[in-house]
Length: 322
Ligand code: F6P
Image 1 (cartoon, rainbow, N blue to C red):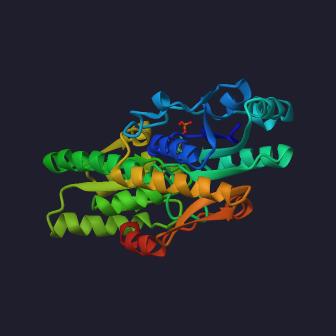
Image 2: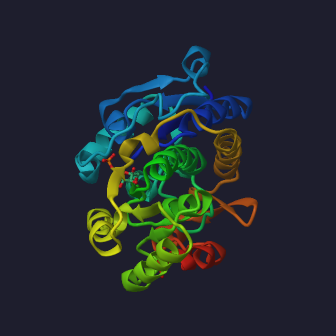
């Protein structure tokens, strides 16, 4: 019987998960492994929702957003008895390797599983937050950025038509990557993130000068959710700068949508790297893409360090913070 490998998506869904699932299953088959699909994330492992990856289950999925395998954040997986149940579910199907597509919380959970039962896994970074240490890119980021760009472009239309200020709160949890890149891409006047110090007095002076002397009659402010400043800044623009301001919280629309070409190709490359890494004997590695090259890092290096923002992006964003 061929060795079984199970593919699971876990944590917050991200565009690119489906092409990664499809490619991982197909490539695993070509390597002589028997691919399985886990439905419902870690909860699915515990409940035994694990099905052989037949062609019908992995065709017609690569263009779809989210994850067709579905996902969850499972508290039960923190308990050894449930992890034991998950292990038995895999063992009785002849599965001895796992591919996990998700964020660092999911990687930590699978690493605990590896410590408990010696079940090797390879992690594929997938989160719109782009906050996983060691990799420059996580699946879903390009699609999310394009969703945000489309929304901000639309908001710019109404802002200029109506001479208003708009504050746009974008996701990212504690990370300001999405906010910074989308502020740059949409030509925002203000960008507030947890990473960069900002000075509202000097932002106010700059914009008032432009309103009084240069004909500025609209403002776009992109605010990362991690700052928790979106409400405050909206009122502040209204009261201190004197321009009518509205707040748009983009919310979960940023997580959906058909994966961009970039996310599809990155998904394929990450999936192939993950299978090759497992086949080469590595047991708990996370795939990374750094400075244009694919590789892997031991999970300890990924989970014990912090994501470092590209200094070039920080520098470009500086003028929007003062
Ligand atoms: O981690 C992805 C993410 O979308 C974050 O940007 C956001 O803070 C969080 O998940 C929202 O979580 P939930 O979908 O549980 O509301």
